[in-house]
Image (cartoon, rainbow, N blue to C red; front, top):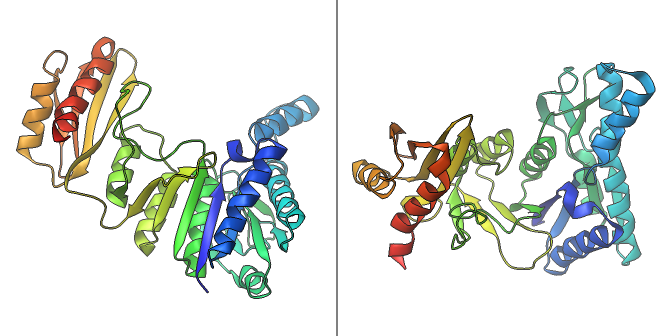
Length: 323
């Protein structure tokens, strides 16, 4: 069985139309001869609404065990709705909680550590011809309590499940088309990266760019599980994250602000002194100094008021000249 795990973010499941679109993407994988399993986040804003309801009901702070039980409900809503949408298209599906899908955690509420995955139930459903739809972000403690995995926990659920199933690919469907050479809102000519390495994505996240949850990327790297980061709203390919990645050199840029200071980081593989010199030269109008340099990242300090221009200048230096 060639298994693919497809994870949908909350924005991809925010309306009935989007849930039906997600169902179509799962069924498209089925038509290509793959055995899909889906992992879902809570619909957009549902978790915040549940926490607000709890605060109005019981005040704060909330009891941590009951808060986990409440927050896990959002993902279960998504799982049931997506399974219904798949069934409405004539295929068999089954929604599963994290516990039913074998997500075993420690007993730390709100930020549980995922200890192991026992995927027997998911494998059984796949062999029976049903499409499992797993509630992300949650598991079960040794005491049998519902636990949640912390921020980005659904990403971790998807990667861990894919690894346990021996999946050929884990696909993340969100509201972005992939990873870009720089933030498109700041750099209009930024372009989508076709392939990037785990190490580069981890550096990009550490530099301050919200790409994917760090634990999930690190776990995918350890198991060498290919990831495909792509949009729920477009059919075009996204960015593949693999052990090899693309070409050596600078692959993307990140901008981070903190107070009156900012930093621009060039991410890539095989970076050296020539890349540092080019980065400093390109950002000469605003760069203060080199903060750090490694084979994977070159970080420059820049004044916050000229950070956008420094990012655009580095992008011109590293990418536009290569066209």
